[in-house]
Structure formats: structure tokens, C-alpha cells
Length: 436
Image (cartoon, rainbow, N blue to C red; front, top):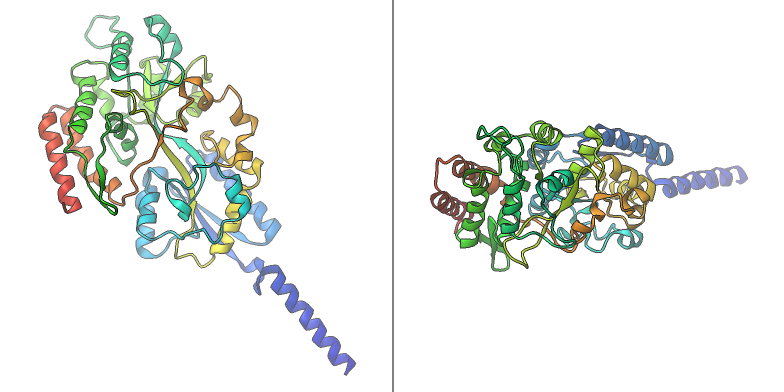
């Protein structure tokens, strides 16, 4: 009897220990998967390091897979359609995360979010996608990067701190900064530059022109619907102003339409552009490529607007999401929290991913993000958070841009179609695809 009792107590102890360790399942048997598109190789290496450390601490295996940034949206949509999504998805609001949420493919994490996570996240964390995604990086997607030395040579003064240039002020500066020193009709220094129309990612370059004028591809139509915003005069004015930069004012080189990152990097390094419209990741890129120092070799300002009140910052977040198809939602969330609620882990990840600011308050206090040598603290771009504006959370927004707006805008820029005709065609096409 005594022996039997001891056996029973031993079995009970094993069972209790098993339940305590992993809810009845050995944590060493748990595997979760994460897909990310963080471009720098150092980011992938750090995530792999985190996975190994997490395995050592918890026994949970985290399999990390990388999908190139340019194919992230298409790859993820394909996985959603086939039901083969990983347990954790890294997304970005300008690369389709809003689409995934609107499609019902992402889990509402409100039941998993800890009080500590809610306390540590910045106040605007859930403004865009609610609790369907946890933002871990802040990514201002458009600013005017400029070369102070070239400004001084041309006698151009940047806008006052906390202000955006008017469009007329911007154009006047761009004209002064465009220099044809050889007199052959082709400037060696262009006043302004932006990246070409090719591909989904170009949306970040061209949508700001619409926003500056108070327009957009689509606008709300009642509580739950959308309608074309391209029939508004502001949309025509915005596109006409952008096209004039290259065709009439000749401050933007015609070849920009085919530009990719290598061309832009080369032009920057050769001082062939005085101002460049690009995301804040550029600061890290030019520092790594050329050793350029913020405040000396480059500075930043907000995108110009035609009138006060239109100031904006094209803001996006990088998110961690958990698809509805995941069978390991709690384990997936635990890994996310393990990364984000450790200030050094989160700050290290932010540094390797283009030095973008983290969303965790304690990580933001890291000296790498909090001193005056960090571009986002520039007094000329100090209102970037207050001016934050996100893309509309419509699953059709990105598709409309790719299928309809890009090809027609390109026809306008290259002179194959007039502004009036092109914008009218955009408006008709968008209405047809929206069903209104």
C-alpha cells in the first residue's frame, strides 16, 4: 500500500511539473514560425540570434524565414490565400498590413496584450490598426533630405524650425539649386530628386504629392465605404505640380522615372542632387555608404505643402502580427513580448533595421535614439510625430496604386497623356474598380 501510494504521488508530481512548465505540453516540443522582410542582413542575423537565445531560455523553437521587401506583399497575400501563413508576420503599413487586417486574416491581440506592453508602447501605437498588430518600429516614409553645403553655395535658407515650405518656396529653392555649369542644357546639379514610378514601393514617393494638396487616391464614402478622390480639383493640381517639376520647371531630371536605389545613391554621392524625397531610412544608408554626418553633410525637412494646414508626415509602423491560422498564438505573442519588452533587445533590433526609432518607450530612451545627433530629433523635422498621417486602411488602396495609378501617372510624366486626360482616366478607372 505504501509503495503504491509513493508511485501515485510520483506520477502526480510529474504531471503537475509538466502542466506548470507548458500547460500539459513540453515546451521543447513547441515550434513557432516567423516571416520577416527587414532588409539589412544584420537584422536577419540578430533575429536568428534571438531565436537561439529564446530556445535556450524557454525550449521553444523559433524558425525565422526572410522574404525580400519588394516581394513581401505578394508573398504574404499568396500565403494568406493558401492558408500557409507563419505564426508571426512582420508587416509594414505601406506594404499591405492594413490589407491583411481588413481581409480578416490577422488575429485581434487584445486578449493577449499584457498591461506592461500597453504601458510601454508609445501613445499612438494602436491608432492605425487597433490591436490587430503590434508596432515595433516607427518609420517616417517621406522627408526632404538636403545638403546644407549646396544650400549655402546657392544662397538658399531652409524653412524655419517646425515649419514646412510652401510649394512656391520649395520651387523657388529648387530652381536656385539646379545648376548647368557646363551650359550644355543638362544640369550637373539638380535642385530636387525622387525615385521612379516603377513598382509598389514608389507609392511612398508619389502619394505625398497628393497629400500635400489635400487629395488622395480614395476618400471615405460613408462609414464603411470608399470612393475615388481623383475627381477633386486638388488631385489634378497635385499631379500637375509634380509633373511640372520635370517638364516645365526642369528642376527634376527626366531620368528619375527609372531610378532605383543604386542610381539615387550614386547621384547623392556625386552631389548631383541638392534635395531628395525619401524615407528616414536614408539617414542610415548615407552614413553607412559615405560616412555622412547628420547636421553637417545632410539635414531633413518636412514635405512642402501649398497652404498651411496641409502639413503631414507619411508615417508607417513596422508591425508584428499573428495570423488567424496560427495554432500557437499564445506562444507567438510570448516571443514578440520577449523581444519588445527588453529595452536593449528592442533598441538593438531598431538599430540594425535602418536605425529607425522603436515604439517601446524604454528603448526610445537609449542614447542611440535620444540625443541631438539623431536625425528625427532635428528641429526642422520636430513635428514629424504630430503631423503623422497613415495610408487609408482599404484593402484596395495598394492594388489601385499598382494597377491603375502608376501606369497612367507615368504616361502623364512622359508626355504621352495630358494631365487633364490622365487624371480623368484615373478617376474613371478607380470608380469602376470600386464599383461606384
